[in-house]
Image 1 (cartoon, rainbow, N blue to C red):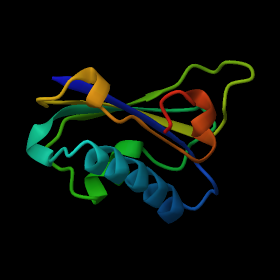
Image 2: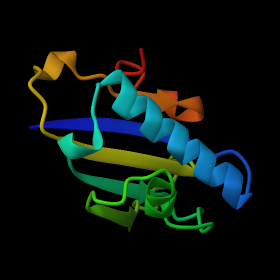
Image 3: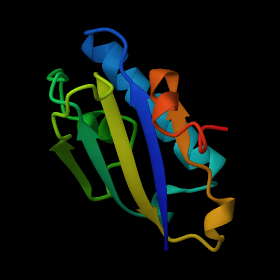
Length: 118
């Protein structure tokens, strides 16, 4: 089992745009790690407190992740933290080393882990 990390800073307040950005993050995370739905164990999403558009899991369900357990939580409200950010922690059954896992950070979220955002 491996853990896959990722994040995206959301741009805009439109629900469709919000869903599209979350789906882009998930699409890249799964594609770059060659993960299919059967490999997934679960996905945990966190959202900064300033995001109130919808649950990130709703975007995942809309893109077809209907049989994967999903959970959403609110990120800690820390002074100076990156605003409007969705973080993802996905667990998957993979036959790869940790070094082979590609973590995906998009847009403004690259500053969270520049060492992983290759």
